[in-house]
Image (cartoon, rainbow, N blue to C red):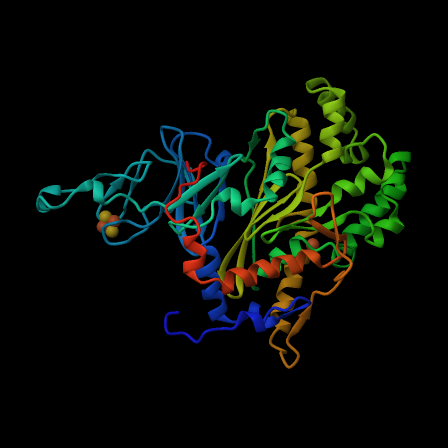
Length: 452
Ligand code: FES
Ligand SMILES: [Fe+2]
């Protein structure tokens, strides 16, 4: 415990309320780094970000700087970005392509797999100096699922498959929208920061209660557009009264802190009719997309893919998949957070359709969009208000007691239920109260089958 007073997390998080100290206390932030980010599985990046040998991106696991780099064998390595000599970062470009990593201080040079290639003037070292002992430190456990690369700084613990659980199927959904099952992550990054705690962005991403209020200007613009551009399908799908009441779709607890807003039900199932892609309603190219999809797959597969739609899922603690983008929440301090959105494109789609998808993504998400800044503003308002802690409890009881199981037993509530927030906090509390021994010993010594 580093000599710090022990915090009783059971008193801070209750089933129906959360003490706002969880957003403001620097010691809690330290504990989160240690117990969630530096111990468990954390999403680091997607293989599609480094498609060629030598491609690299700078990442973080918690606050530890990491290089994600593809080597000549095609393997994606996660290397701690710290020279083994006297500790300078060996790579300071955020992305690029490198033949090797040469430290700017004394010139120690590392290969793409992290091994030490050479040092200047080696003759000054005696025979005990062995190059193979001084490669860049590797992230102890690295595992991939469908191209999503996760790392754990703990050498032992549950496998990635165990960590992902039911959320793996939502990753399947995200990837499966590409018939070639390949996504490209080369369209750049929407990056923004805010002066508030990282968990506010995590909770908000799976909050089906806020959109019609926080994003009222966006919602009314969409409604206006629908009113001015009526089509039978559109009108039936997006009944403004139901939409405003938040009655479409479901909020679902997938276990392990993974949660989702299931919009798939919303758009298609209640109507029990042939699905139509949202792109059709807003752009004439929608018809082209639909016929292209049918031609490349089959009418049945096209219908399935559209009925499934995308996903809207949190993979605890830091990966969010919404529509076509991957979103990574990066804590930097207790009251400062960075968020990166990686819009993806699909190889099998025509460039025109990929363009339309990107433009529609930009309309709502990202730092200069009609949606994202609304949320960041709210996060900072919550952080400010947390100082008024005579009554410190934030309430997450909406829909409590009204949850019901789906066919597989996963609990869900109405779209505006706070079942998702409760599930996030339950996992948070579990990890914050679990001691290192319990977290690490269950699978001690085992290797994950997906280890890269
Ligand atoms: S600190 Fe990197 S070579 Fe000296
Ligand atoms: Fe929002």
